[in-house]
Length: 142
Image (cartoon, rainbow, N blue to C red):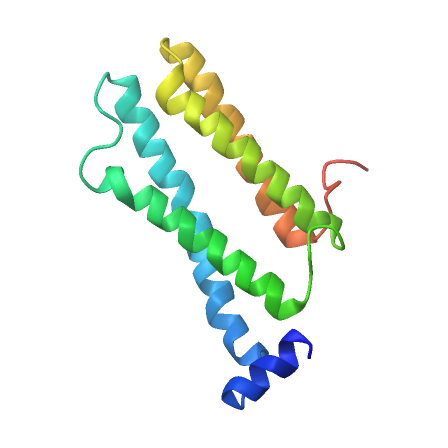
C-alpha cells in the first residue's frame, strides 16, 4: 500500500489535506532558525554562555520540528533524497550548516573567526532556501 493510500485508509482523508499546515510550519521554523542561531553566536562573541534560558532548548526544538516537518512532507509527497537530488542537496547542506554552526558557537576563539563561520552558515542557509524554492541543487550555476 503506498503512503497516500495508507493515510486515506487510516483517517479517510487525502494526505494532501495535512500538507499545507505542515509546509507552513516548516517555513516558519526555517525562518526562525537563523535568528536563534544568530542570537547564540552574538552571545558567544560577547563572551557569554550561548545556551542560556530559552537559547538552551528553543533552537534545538525548532530545528527538530523543522526536520520532522521536512521528513513528513517528503513522505506525503513520496520523495526521497536518492530520488530527488534537490532533497539530497538540502540534507547535505543541513549537515554542513550544523557543523559550521557548532564551530561558530563553540569551537572558535576569535570573533573574527566566529564572524567568518557565521557568514558561512548564513550562506549555507541561503543555499538551502534557494534549493527549497527552485527544487534545483545547482541554483547558483547558469
